[in-house]
Structures are given as structure tokens and as C-alpha cells.
Length: 187
Ligand code: 4NP
Image 1 (cartoon, rainbow, N blue to C red):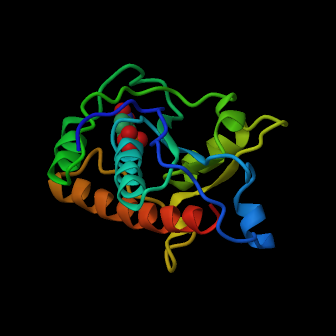
Image 2: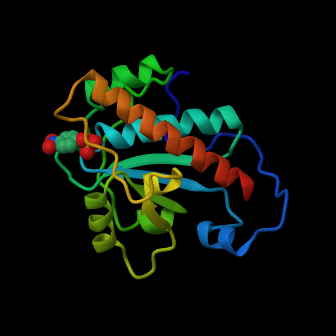
């Protein structure tokens, strides 16, 4: 899969196939709109770009129309490409993320996106602090989407090696598959 515009929706129409349950409504704050998902880690150069790539790949595979982006709570790497090890991991799995550029999460993201997922518990705490009063986005921990892994963080591979990036890819892919399936179920 080649590089794509990061904020451009995948142009496959959504069909509303069934009535929504109360649980669906809580999960889908912008329920009549196309979902838009933001993944957030610390630097936006390792975990959240991989989460964005895995989710983009799965959404495309499953034909889910969705807007996808990623950001960091910190600003150290703003404007930088993802870590080369993250680029290599994504490319091995068929996604070119070399054109991604790191940015810092903003208060506007809480109304711009329908869903914001933190990669770890520290990111989630920081996002809760940043969250404005008029926020509409669902805010949660990414691995809460994976049965049996609720409350867990995606480990930071920054000080690790190739196998750590492979494990990150594995974790974000499992979350991406669960999340795409859940979003599709209410589309
Ligand atoms: P990320 O990884 O939050 O998954 O992008 C990190 C990237 C950079 C740093 C820490 C974690 N850093 O300390 O610069």
C-alpha cells in the first residue's frame, strides 16, 4: 500500500445496516457521522504512527470509511518523520509511513475527532488533563479494544530493538482489527 493523504477519508460509502444499541451509542458519540480516529502516544514517532498505519490498513481491507490520524502528547519530535525502525516495521507489513509527520495533540482534536485512543496510561492521563469542557470525542485506552487486554498499555519500543517494534505492530494490529469491526457494526 502506498503513501496516502493522512486526513483524507477512504471513499467507500457507509450504509446504516441496523439499529444501534445503547452500548453502541455510548461508543459512537458522533454516531450519524463518519468516524474519525486519532491515536496518541508520547512522541508520535513510534507507537501512534504504527497504530495509525495498522488501523488504516485494516479499515481499507474491510472497506470502512474513516478518517485517521495520530499525534503525540509531547512536542519534541513535531515535524519529524517516524522513527526509522517504525518505518521499517510498517513497510514489512505493507504500509509506507515515511511521509507521516509528527504533530502534537491539541484541544481542537477533542471536537475534530469522534474517537481518541491513548497508547498508554500516561498518555491517557495527559489527554484527560488537556480535554476541554466541550469535548465530544470518545477518549479511551487503545488496548481496551482487545478482549483480555483491557487496561493495558502498548509498551514503548523506543529503547528496544526490532523485536519490540514487531510486538508493537502485533498489538496495534489486534486493536485495529477489533476497532474496525466494532465501528463497522454500528455503520
Ligand atoms: P512514541 O515513542 O511515544 O511511541 O513515539 C517515543 C519517542 C520518543 C521518545 C520517547 C518515546 N523520546 O523520549 O524522545
